[in-house]
Image (cartoon, rainbow, N blue to C red; front, side, top):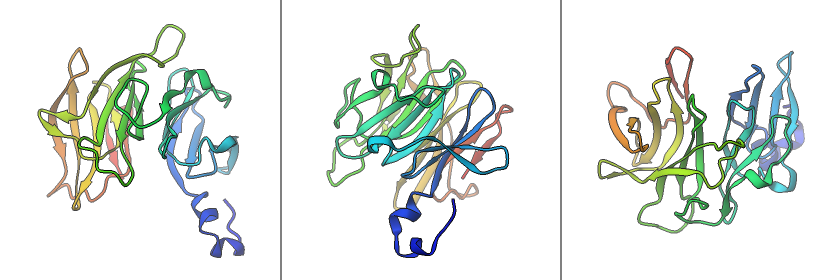
Length: 239
């Protein structure tokens, strides 16, 4: 984005230019999610082209997005009474009837604590990192929720599992997710007191988690994993 002199005193304008997530659609087009300025398509010359605007403030506090094999856009938004996974068509049309969550805080199939990260596996199952951000202190602020797609391409009312612990250990602020070709789930936890890691989970037939590895601490030296990308060769890139 172009930076102007006026931006020096306008913190919100600078925040709106932040790119916080990147994904590629089935046609190979690259898209970026900005902090408060919607989703942009990366043009042929590397410039950013408006694609999904922040209309009606639907994307005012978007934290992550992911594109499934149908080319639909799924966007995690996390703020008081606006806790949703919003859904847009491959052409950028808002699909309100497919949006996940009723906006309120909760544990039910149609509620979120606060979506922070999204990922799809090769079967288009949707994984949501769900963590409460706010001034309260709930006893179990974190969860992972997993949804299946129905015959019409809709995930609404199709929650297949959710869990807030792995082998009895509570999740600690899951922020980003990624799934490799073997359907192993990588969970970046910000943790607390500068203790952060990426947990590697194997899921059974009921999508219940079994931890098989953990990346973090010496010699991995992960301070605050903000993003995970897994390429087609299952190489892992952690920011």
